[in-house]
Image (cartoon, rainbow, N blue to C red):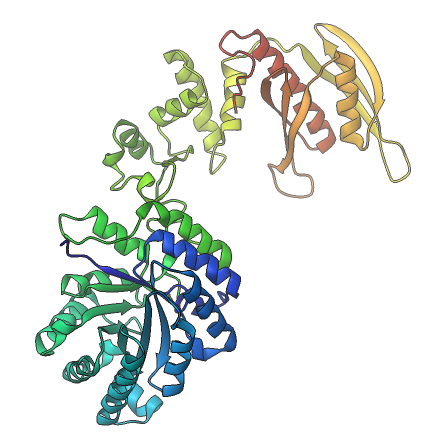
Length: 514
């Protein structure tokens, strides 16, 4: 049988303790169902004694989830254990998880109990929990700041009392990997009946070491990892499920341990947690961050295009993504730029590519990221360029709270000047309606956006207009300090590009160049 790690997910309990991350019963159930799809072994559904709402949520989850062990947290108090059992008793696989602090600072100032009193209470609570439930977990709160021999004594006592899992938490995120590995090894070597229980580790991320410490604990012989999705939790959070799972998956050469996690569900689960809790995943977060599979550096993009494994140690599809993300920006190289052009349907000659790449770099120096619409505009200007059929010569608009928006437009159409006027629901609409009427166009405006490209009250405005006609889609751009004039310029520019596309043999109807 494969040696494997049991994944104990506490997103619904410890994760909910993140400031502002409280969830209602419906949201918790939705997360629980996704965690079941993900394949976690144990789901800590909540702390039933903490509130009637938490009791109800845990009870609902326990009644609904069939393929995952459902744990309810309880202090070493009979009422807490009764509440936990009342909430999970109808679960297909129930577990009572009870805990008490074992560090000297906690026992002296918080509990005001001696070591012997703590051991006595731990034993009685585990015995009582085991009389109700076959699966009982016992945790030593602030374990990593506890005396190691005292830890061995209390673990030996609770295992004898019926604990099936013993958990060593780094409650305050204090330990470092080498120290934690040594502590886990010591406990395993000096607790005579340790073989009768599964050893678990639960690490917090106060020093950014939660994942490293959990892996160190696993290397030292722990076989249950207590984790949360996206690493959410109190203070700096908990060990991230996705980081432990994908480390085991990716580095099987170093850690020959399996798991029951369906890795393709990692990204969907991460998105669900973020959506429900409102806690945004930082872009550079491992595995599930927006930049985890994004490449902008030219050297990296070139390598990934030739073989993704040059810069990707795992495939994005493994965690539930459709593919990687080639960010086109000022750091992008020629190969990435050419690949994006091919995806857009352009096969350019070497000279055309070289000329376009120079323009692309000039534009990239002004913007953080280049969109496909920007590349399309460059192609239209540099490669598909033909003499403009339409040119805006004059524009005058009248508008206001009482006036009917009216536009007077003068165009040059194939070397002939024409002038007309029209109405609209606003000055820009009036200008567009007039232009369409003058050239007898059937083009439809699909999208319209305005951006300031300089600062101050007299900022230059840049207008982008996406037009569609007879299956062709083109992007028009116009700039001016007067936003209405910039809009008219963008509209005329888009109409010219539509004409270019109709005349260019590279593109056929129904081919979008977006």
